Length: 91
Image 1 (cartoon, rainbow, N blue to C red):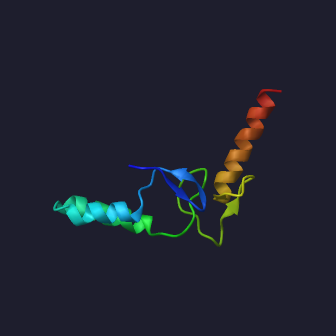
Image 2 (tube, rainbow, N blue to C red):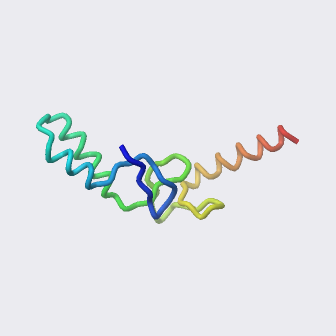
């Protein structure tokens, strides 16, 4: 598996749709075909991934972090809260 860069965030360990399609073309195993189809569907999903949890963000509700990367609002709140608590404990 290669690291694939995304225009929406940092590099992540997701395979490109081409890699998945090539494997799908060579796979006779039905269970593996089903799994590869699900992986291919995810690879073709153009929504950005949250830079915190790596799950897809809906464009209508996603926010951006201090680096300009897409994040879920809940993930950002948790991250900032944990950072504040950590900073308070180290002061």
